Image (cartoon, rainbow, N blue to C red):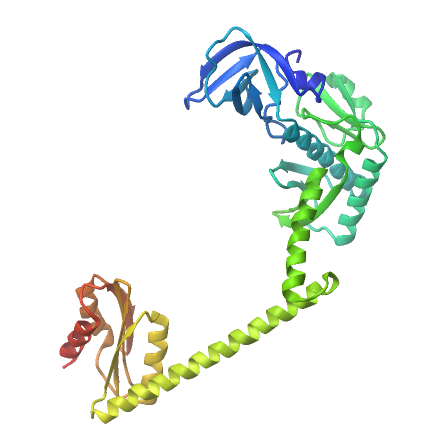
Amino acid sequence: MENKLYYKDAYIKSFTGKVVKQEQDQAGNWYLVLQQTAFYPTGGGQPHDIGTIGDRRVLNVEEVDGEIRHYLESPLQEIGMEVTGVIDWQRRFDHMQQHTGQHILSAAFDHLFHYNTVSFHLGNELLTIDIETEMLTEEEAKRAEDLANKIILENRPIEIKWVKEEELSQYPLRKETKVKEDIRLVIIPDFDYNGCGGTHPKATGEVQVIKILDWEKQKKNIRVHFVCGNRVMIQLDQKQKVLLELTKRLNAPEKDMGQAVIRLLENGRQLEKSFEQARENLLHYEAEDLVGKSKKSGENIVTCIFQNRTIQELQRLARNVTALAEQSLVFLVSENEGRLQLVCARGADRAENMKNLIGSALRLINGKGGGNESFAQGGGEALISGQEMLQHLLEVIK
C-alpha cells in the first residue's frame, strides 16, 4: 500500500514519482507504472481519476495484476525518470462527496428499515443504490434522506482504519467484507462501519447535502437515484431553468404547474380526437366523391393516384369506398419518394381475387405485401409510374 498515495492522503492534488514501466496493452493503448501514485484506479464502484503526468493527459487508471496502470493519450519520450502527476481535483472531490454520500444514505436505510444495499453505481450525473426491498414509500425515502442530511450537518469525523480479518469482530460492520487481508474500514462513529477501498473526505460535512431524486423497481430490489454535494446544486440549477421556462410558456405559477400540465395534456388529447374525427370525415367525403365520379363514368371501378399518402390512409379510403358501393372494385396507388404503395379492394357484390391481383402487380416493382381475396395491399420500388401501375391492374382484371 506504500505506493498508493491516495490512501495516505486523499487530498493530495499533485505528486512526483519515478516511471517504473511504460508499455502497450493488448489493445495497443499506452500506459505507464509509477513508483508511487496519487491517481485512484477504478474500483469498488468509484471511477478512476484523470489529470496529467508530465505533459500527457491521463485518460484512464486501472489496477491490473497488482500494478496501477496510467493510460496516457500518448507515451512519454523518456522513462526511468521522475515525473509530476496532477490530479483533476474537481473530479476527485466530486467522487469523494458522492461515494461518502452513498455510505451515509445506505447506512440510513439500514438503520431505519434494515434495507441492505446490494449494489452501488457512481455515474457522471447520478448515483444509484439497489436496496433489498420490493417497495419503497415516499415516507420511507423522506426519513432516510432526512437522517442522512442530519449526519452530514453534524459534521461527524470520518475515520480510516486498516485491520486484520480477526479484528473485524470488534466493529459492527454494515456488511461482510470481501477482502481477507489489508482490510480498510471507513468509519463514521456510532453510525456506519464499512469495508471500502474508495477515497473519502475527513468529515461528513464535506458531503454538503444528499437529495433522493427518484426510485424504481429493479427485479426484486428498489433502485434509488440520488445526488450529493455540488451535484445537488447542478440538478437544482437545471430543474429551475426548466421550471421557469414552463411557468412562462404555460402562464402559471410554480405551485400550479402540475395542474397546468394536466390541462395541457387533456386539451391535447381532445384536439387529437377531434383531428382524428375530422380526418375520418374527410376520408368519407373523399370516398363519396370517388364513388360519384365512378358512377358518372358508368363504371364500377374506382381508381386514383395520390402523392405521398400513407398505406393506412389508402386502406381506410378503400374500405370507405367498398362500404358505399358494394359492386365496386377499388385500385388506389400512391407515389411516395421513389416508392409505390397500392391497395386493391372489392365490394361485397364482386368475386375477383385481390390477393392474386396484387401479387402480379408487386412483381413489377420488387414489392412485398399481402391480404386476402377481398382486400390486399403492398408496396415496392417506383420502377414504373403510378399511372402505369393502374393500367396494369385494369388490364389484368379485364
